[in-house]
Amino acid sequence: MKRLDKKVGFLGAGNMGEAMINGLIKSALCEPHHIWASDVRAVWLHQLKETYKINTSEDNTEVFKNVDVLILAVKPQQMDEVLDGLCPGFPQTIRGGKLIISIAAGFPIERIEEHLYSPLDENSQGLLPIVRVMPNTPALVLAGMAGMSGNRYARETDLMDARTILEAIGKVIEFEERDLDAVTALSGSGPAYIFYVIEALVEAGAGLGLRSSDALSLALETIKGSVKLLEETGEAAASLRKKVTSKGGTTEAALNVLDSHKVKEHLMDAVRAAAQRSKELSR
Image (cartoon, rainbow, N blue to C red; front, side, top):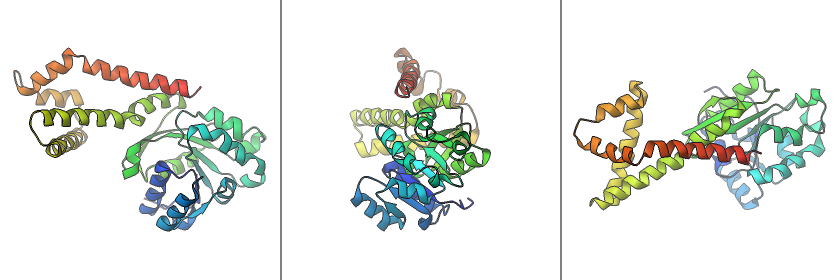
């Protein structure tokens, strides 16, 4: 992976922020001294500084002033206040331009623009391109899956920089912003669906007399192996499922129960419900 020749700052350095800091350093994408972070927890900032040797500050505007790429990693309910706090320093603090990347769920680009663009003319607005990202929690182990969308000022170079940063913690696909609710429902909330299935498999195995630790190992390795088989063969999931399902066999007996309870339909309903809730939260 090529080195990102830019300074990167984080407003908010919780789990996802730290995961991105770790990914940037571990991938050698950024030198620690090119990374800045702010957070409301002074003790936590000190710990981040000791662990990663990055620059830290309790002042968001200091971070904003010193970086080329600013990642908004605060909770959505804090975003309005945080964004408004950056504006008094405009336009001096945006000379040369800065890329804004938001990973706040349910906070649309339009709302970010309302805060950051209101004190600026159109030329100055173009110096603050915005990319909205929907990551997921496997980013904590550098195995994330994210969707991203840029606003009208985000050039191809800006999108490439955002992609480079996100690929330090996993994979990313570019979407239109209107599709990010579906991304949220599928990959953003998706880890919870997988954990839900694993819970059920482990409980079922334990109920059949297996030790819970053995049931967990069986479930995890089966899921990992199935994903690898799907990726390496390139076959459709439905095709591979049929190959496992012998007529009159054990798998068919299990799938008959799932079909009788309409598990597939209910799972699809669940994803749709998550997408609808994402739309509601974005309003």
